[in-house]
Length: 272
Image 1 (cartoon, rainbow, N blue to C red):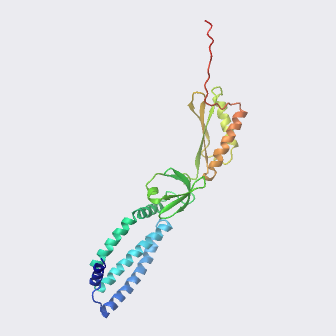
Image 2: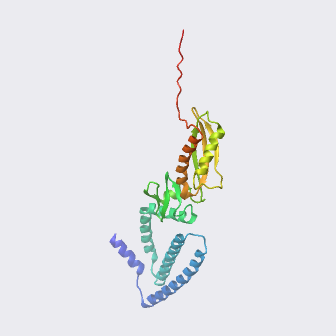
Image 3: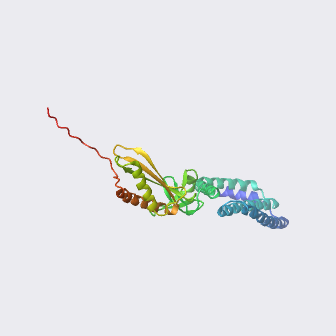
């Protein structure tokens, strides 16, 4: 194997002369100047795009690498180096690296998709792949989430880019939904009045869209009512729990019984 590589390199480089070296050096300098001018132009064009700053940096780095490779090939041609053997060796090496880094490349591609499409940003509360949390960091390989329980979760970008993502922060508001049950004996308007009073006593509820109360189901032992209201993402859980406490208080104040599933047994006396 070592002998084959040595012979390939020897065949590639052949015999170098001083004139070839000078010509190649001049060509390389010209290529570097052209690359510098091209990168300035490309940088201006990319900066005018709507791409994320990190994506812009990755794109510029990729273009710069390609230009350097092209400059190297042009310089090698000036030296009359036979690139066939070297290209074959590089192809085999790149194939091995590609196979070994398939998952990494997939994550990098997913990271570029996320950064360019902006389905979420740092600080957003999202749910993806049965995991919910606040986005802490978006890198090329992983996206870090902090769950409400205070757990750091790292999601591979390859899976994240291909899964369903729910962003609860993007629109600037979240709907709070609370379900309560009341006795069949309680008048509907009395129950709704108690729910509206609980809404009025709960802080941080948005006025637009306006809160609403609906009778949604007739159960075996109770009637179900559903309450909808809206809050900003940062106040969502405060409103959710505070509303539950206010409902218990206003139901008691209006004499509405919060029933639960129960079974009534009637004993009939047999007098025969």
